[in-house]
Length: 466
Image (cartoon, rainbow, N blue to C red; front, side, top):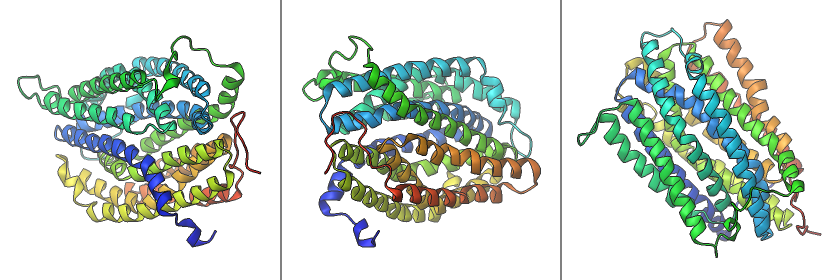
């Protein structure tokens, strides 16, 4: 493909940014408040920060399972929106509710009964810092409270994803902003015990997060049902949870690989962090700092990736296949170019950011190294993330699974496992080697997208280009 064809028109960028910017703002505020939360907990000491970080590894698995469970249905939602099929969107939303109920039930049982052994998997001697027993205590304390927020989080994601697929990106953003501001204020009050409230530490951070989940759900549900002229698909959505059998089977066929992919990918990333944790508690704290800060910078390519799923999915649903192909490559190029700039900014500040934390010199040095490596890899992650959503938009869920979680389990984890268990290599070069493996995924992503096999319309009744 010629370089010039990767550059879109002004109209193209306006269309993309109209969808992506609200998502960026929402995710940006969420991640920024997450960073402030992380800094607040980090002021309490290495043990509390590490305990919260480990518990959040498990919550991360739940979040990704919800994302995966909704993603399969979301492919159909975006394409039904492209052909303006209200009943189709309503059925997809009902399917999402059923998926959320099932995932919540499984995770509440698993994290409720087995939180101690799961958290203990990340606790290893190996550095001069940290009390492992105290870290376990804080992790369990945090996890027990966070379980209360699983259901409202899942339901709010079901609503938000449906709204985005139909072009309503501002309302999920507004609800999310209200939630994160609630979280931020309550974190300050409850972690440190301000204005006469008890100083709850890590438990205060969990309590603030749970309250914010209910705030977000309440706001997004209220708006969704109060504006039937803009969201007719939510009308009578709860009259039953019936989904047409043929559609349900089609969603399961396309969506099961995505749910399995996100489950495998999230468990794989947690396993990768567990491999890193064999080098000591200081590594857990450093990885926590690095990942929290990196996620703030990663919101651009994460939001553009989601936008690819919506924009390209809508075009495929409308039968505009050639336009979908061209638009996709332009969006990929835009995402990668943006991340060269952001990656440079993160690299330039990588040694300064860890100084904001009240932790040891060892943790700060490791965090700075991890941040610099993550900054250099950002354009590569942007490319693979865009490829993921490209494949997903056309219903290529099996290839998506192989490309995403298959890469983690077949490439990253074997390398990390061998390096952590059978060598004495230091953590920084281990982290560098595992991160550099993203190049393999870039090559695979390019070949998959270039093949054009993802350019398909999968919803019934759509008009195809001739």
